[in-house]
Image 1 (cartoon, rainbow, N blue to C red):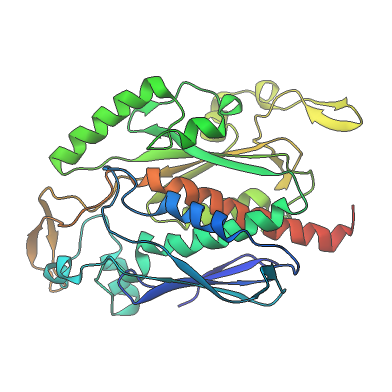
Image 2: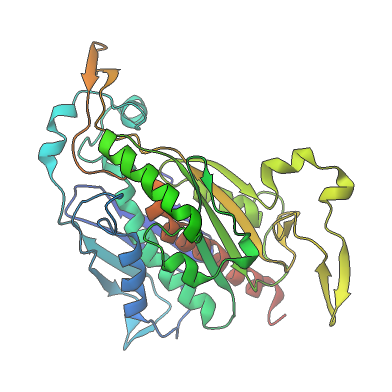
Length: 362
């Protein structure tokens, strides 16, 4: 099964299944001599793990991790870093009744059609459980970035259902997002969202959401034409996330409503650097960063695991009625926030290393 790795210079391979004994990641290409803050990796995993609020999965996982290789006396050695996270809180009994039934909105049928076999315990390989090692790898990527750059990466929930934050991306503070149980940096509209989530939870239903991410202080020149564009790589890893159905950079789909005069970012010269008077492009032109903040959004569909009754079929084509048991996320976008940050860090780290290889100390 290909498609388990992302990155070229900084390469992350994820392994494991939802209800297997362990999950993990292998990082290749991490530069030597980076002093790892292990506590920071733990903090990032805590932000992602289930049980953070009553609107996310109640699966009990400590997400304690072990670094098996690639680190000596607290510093990276330049050799592959292997990370292991043990699974502890799964319950296979919740899935025995769907072993031969295709759950609506899940990858059950597509995995069966492609491989002729599927792990029905928690979705196996298609489970969001696999985002835990991604977050751990992303925390390491961010530490590599921070060791030589002032780049910051901040994601937050921009919209759930039809309720959207009023704050513009350039005004969002990290504390605003971290101070919210759902990573929503708008206190006024947060109350309305919490009411919506409460009602959906009682109904046994779910809702979709949008996560916005801002990558700031990034240098101009990252990205490769034609098919390794910076926004292309960001799009690929984000759409590779569970439940993602949309991705846009800058004005995104709304740019179709603008004329060229309105949408173009006019360049100017400020303190010896090229700047633009607007950032409609979201910080990327021609697939290469232009020095402005990179702003993109990721759209997540509603969690398909709901307790309301739905119609489906089994593997023999017979009609069935299904109600998914267990404690699932009311909105997957909430726990996706640190995952979006982690994947962004991996992509940026990868392109920084490529840039260094091409341009030396430039």
